[in-house]
Length: 543
Ligand code: ATP
Ligand code: MG
Image: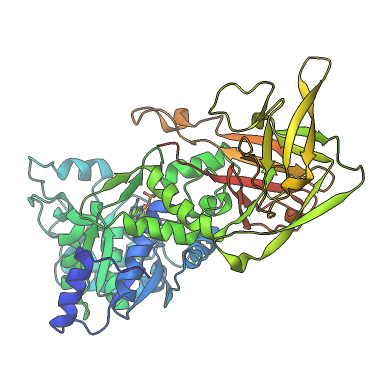
């Protein structure tokens, strides 16, 4: 694990030094209403790393206090993503496990005169709240007696009221400059079926009431969350104190992570899935962890990227170049370097015997011997990239094949183009070339220099493959409607040819297609029907 210091660790260290805590306990509290995205990765990494650095642990707690939006599909996917990132939660809890205790603590608040049932309409309540410049107006129900409140709250629980008819509110301060303290709602009525507790409850705790209790019940020492909860902290502390929780967690906020041209709103991502703009939550263009994974991003590169962005008390936006650089660093060691031709052009070696194939032993990655080696075939029939051939060498800088010009084929021989074959429309469909046996790779031949080195695939053993290329999923400005910003041209497909060693590739196998980019074997790829996703091109376009 990388060791980065930050303001959260400074607080934790001081709490350990003063003896306030002996063990550090954090939690990651996702709402199971969507798949995790790369922004969540910052929260996960911060939660786990902050505890791990001091021998502590982290709970995964599903914040399932909103019955209408939650689903078990998300519950599974979230755990899967956390494990993929490389973390193991100590415990897996559901906020709904604590509904009983939360209810009892609410009764305690009522008994202490600190909560009341309010029958005001939502419109009235909004009006009574006032605004930053105007103090709120107390509800006409604010001074109900403890007995009446206990009875009404009991009736709320028993389903005697309709949805929206009343709520339980904290009795704090209607003129507080902090709007969150103006008698916030603690419980609301909902008859929706809950994914965990079914129809048992028809009252559900509000986030601001539930969250501090969940933390306190689990003995969380440091409750790390994103910056938008800063103004909620006084309420968080009020709830823990007034419900008389024995263990007192401390909320600490950190800045949210945003990435340029990347929208991480779960609502928007869900809309893309539901309107079939994308093939699913794991569409390789999606900023979800499942999407990034299908595309071919590695957990290590995401972790390294998030840690290198640093943690601060302000929200930050970083360019995709940082993430891509972290990815290339990781892939350059991890990926097998193989040859694939994206836009094939036939080359026939006229002086090579028909029917003969020879093989060269070549390591998969010179920088990582552990990846082993494979045999690369060479014969009379080859494919090269269309881009690697022109009729006439245009200038000195051109380091590829042209008529009368000689290049090296990686790991094989020098070849020289002599003639071309055209189709009826005048397109070049084949290059006739000769090879020089004396130039065999590895023999130390140095009598002349080739005009560059290009890649190729032997045609009789090469395997056709579908290659997916991705552009930005979102274009345009922040002030445009998000659905209008969806880039309809963000996915293009090509039919290429890959070297024979890829015949048995499995989903998630990662390759560098030499001179082209990094590719990942797609989830749907099968023997005989190979599919690869471009993860990232070899070089940054930011240069
Ligand atoms: P969204 O806004 O995408 O719906 P959310 O914050 O509502 O996300 P939760 O499931 O509540 O989704 O998120 C779990 C945790 O992840 C929260 O503590 C939240 O603060 C944190 N989180 C979400 N997005 C980011 C981000 N971009 N950067 C850092 N932390 C984030
Ligand atoms: Mg949230």
